[in-house]
Image (cartoon, rainbow, N blue to C red; front, side, top):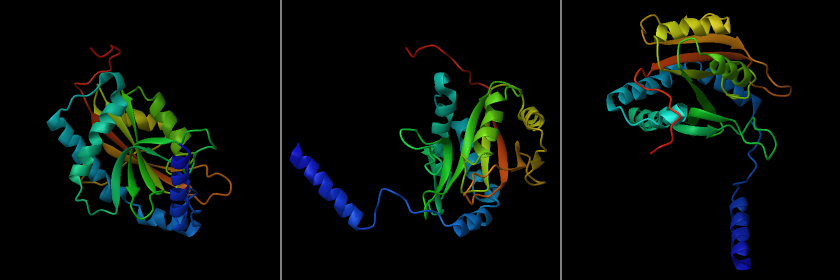
Length: 239
């Protein structure tokens, strides 16, 4: 056992000697500002892959666990997003991604995204999608909470000036869900483009930036509604 620990310590020292440390370097504020510019139209670079994955899922109709709908759907979307990509993009898709920039001191756990696009050049840069199951168009308590308490406090998406909320709608119509979201948030949901008839909209906000941080105060939230009319929550144990 002692010899094993010694080998591990030598390995750790070797890794550290090459510059691979356990504490990431601080992020340059100029870099954060540039990111806001580079990622100002995620609807053109990211969201198409997510819609392609949803449409593929409707065709495939994979088994979904009704005991854990939100995680089950998100997990099934991830490989379909990856399949829609070429593999040459400067980012990759990931399910259950941790945001370590805004985590509280240990033993606290970092915030976790349902889905996220992670930049290859600096994997601390994450464009998140937070999903919520909407049993009806008006069941928006958790949806509203996550936007206000996570995105608009910079706990989510600290390095990006935008992110997405995705509603997994079980009954009712996507258009009604978007109208109810606008009313609940007290904001205008604008169309992303005039020729796009998919149920997606954008809202613009000002975030509460923590003292001493250079995160963007301007924040755009993209709202996507994916209808899963044949799915239902269930509380029964698996057979």
